[in-house]
Amino acid sequence: MEQRFPFNQAASVSKAARPNYPETLIDDVVSYAGLKPNDAILEVGCGTGQATKSFAARGYSILAIDPGSEMVRAARKSLAKFANVKLIETTFEGWPPERGAFRLVIAAQSWHWVAPEMRFAKAAEVLWPDGSLAVFGHVPVGLPAPLLEQFKQIYLRHTSHWGPPPEAGYLPNGPFKGWFDASGLFGPVEHESYPWKWHHTASSYVKLLRTRSYHRMLAPAKLEELLEEITKAIDSHGGAFDADYETHLYMARRLDRDRVLRTLN
Image (cartoon, rainbow, N blue to C red; front, side):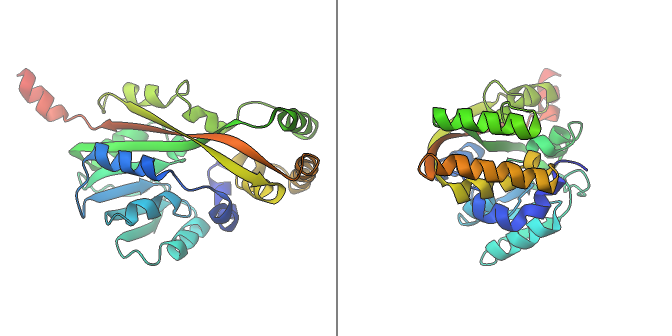
C-alpha cells in the first residue's frame, strides 16, 4: 500500500489533530504569485482542507484534489461555506490536466507523495506562463530533552527505529529546492521559514501521531502499545509540553520556455 493512502483512514482525526498554516505564509504565497481576485488555484492533496480554507477565505477560485474519499468528505464538510472551492477525489497523477488554467499550484504537506516524474511537469502544464508553484510543510524541530530521550527509548523498543521524521525533508537541507532546480521547468526557488510553538497534552499529541503515515503502517496492537507508553511518558512530565515547529515554504515561477527560445532566436 502506498504510504499516502493510509491518511485517508485517519481523516476525522487528522481534521482535529493537524495544525493550520501560518497566515503570514498564506500572505507571502499570495504576494509572490501576484494573485488577483478570482484567480484560479489548484491544490494538490488538500487533505481535510486546512490550507484550502485560508486561500478560500481570500476569495480565490480553488480546485482542490485528494485521492482519499474520507479526506474529501471531511474537506467538503469543513469548506461547505465556500462556494469558490471545488473538490475532486483523485490523485494528481490521474487527474486530467487543464492546460494553462491556474495562476498558482499549491501543495501543503503532500508534494513528496506525487510521482517524481510527474510532479513538476504536470504543474508546469497547468500553470499560466508566469504562474507559480508553492509547496510547504510543517516540521517538528524540538522537544523537551528529557521527553525526547524517553520517546527515543520507546520507539527503539517498539519499532527498532529512531530518526528524523519524514517531515524533516521540508528543512532547507532536504530535497525540495533540488527537485525544483532539477526539473528545469521553474525559475529560482524562494524559501521562507516560519517558526512557532505548539502546546500539546498527552491526548492531543497521541491524536497527532495517529495521523502520521509511519504510525498508520504499524500493526494495530503494536501501535496501541507504543501510544500507551508515549502517553505515560508525557504524563510523567506533567501531562503537557511545548514543541518547537517550523513551517517551510518553497516557491518558484514557471519558466516560459517558448518566450526564452524566441528571445534566443
